[in-house]
Length: 143
Image (cartoon, rainbow, N blue to C red; front, side):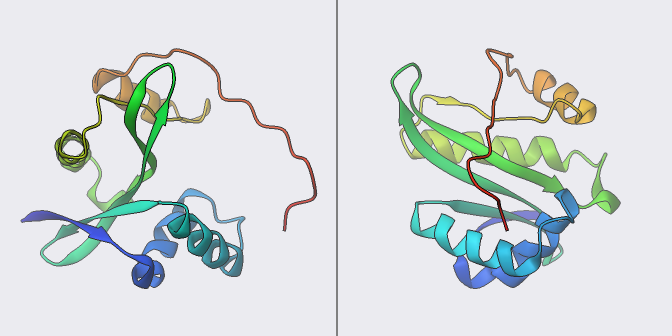
């Protein structure tokens, strides 16, 4: 049975192994520090459980931007590789959409890496449209 639960900062030990699946180059102590700061900035995280075992998660940001209004941004969506292809991603997104509506959001936006072809296909199948590019510039050395 699949269930969804909002996680808190106290769940960092459960969250970090999934973030390491996304990017193993970021040291665990840096992830710890960043997650602490993110939770202070309104970050939310939903965990996906199968028979009480955490098998995936998605970060969530609820923000307002002038061009779209109040919306939810799924962030770093990850399903453990052992559970992909089971329809869990679709169930997660339906949970996120329902949660967003309950939070008075009118849309959903997200970023997807250009190298993540499977993710791009998934998001297009979810009804997302490509509306721009995400740019990044490093301002100082990152630890």
